[in-house]
Image (cartoon, rainbow, N blue to C red; front, side):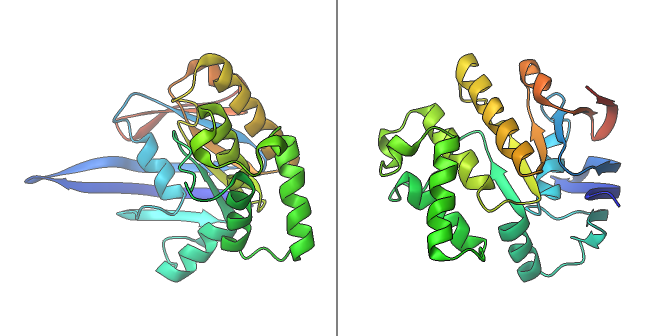
Length: 229
């Protein structure tokens, strides 16, 4: 069984007096532990596709299956619990909570995910993850004094500390320079491979494709290319 699968996925939105077809019958499946890059021009439907898979947007018709279970059929509360426990999110900007320190950002995610770890185990896990991202020296720092690259490293750690099944990354390096972008992708690769996390990433940066196991190109709401790399 595939980890994640879409069946004839359609998304239509009202645009004035007309309906616009954003996604046109997408049929794809994703294997556990792989990094997939979604590419395509602006307006191709890739970000809409990502947010639907991430449970952040509804479908017009079709199915999204996680280990055979329909996200479409879930109630709002069921979907909320699923997102908290099984999904991680990284966006173009870090969106850290301004009044929480670096270590508190990670503890918050463990709380949201209802982690079964004890208080001591959580403390150790946060310490270990901060060590992996080279941020132990910043554990008591607030976001206001962090660099852009440091903020994004914390955002990635926050997204994976609860060991989700899926990581959704929407342009995670778009706000960073070339060197920091490579550092962030190396970090995503290290953390997701360590925990066997399936990663779906939207990107416009061709240099980021070297980190992917698979590249899917979209155009006008359809899949135009699907290749392993």
